[in-house]
Image (cartoon, rainbow, N blue to C red; front, side, top):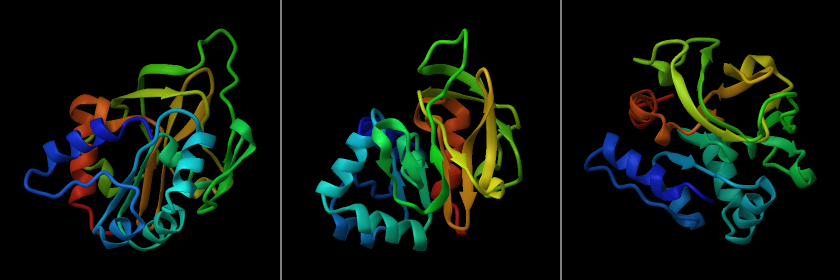
Length: 194
């Protein structure tokens, strides 16, 4: 799922002494205190890997019960359906994941962009509104319930780039590649007790 190593290294950096385990083992996911689901590439491939490893149900259980952070495709998977390959998601959040359709701009959206925080959240602590984060994506979350939108970004059009509900927080950008703001978000997640 693409960015496992860089996410693991960033988590080790912000939580020295904590055990960071990159795994698709359902038992390990179930026993973890908190779960991060990164993903980079194509949603159909990531969903196939999640199902083939037997981790799909464990990830759903984790998202319903413990601090959960989704990154990039780890965010997209939370929704009901992705347009890419007409892929069924985990169905934890109502909505879908359509393709970015913006004229005059390159797809994928790749590079730094401002993130506009829509509401206070523990994971935004110490991060100024309109901080810049690093993006690499061609699809975006379109939640049916706007109340879950925690932040937006503009790339030819405004779109939700972070969602929050209960113990779930997920971002379209890559905090592990987003320098100090991204490391602050990861540190906030490590210390978050929803």
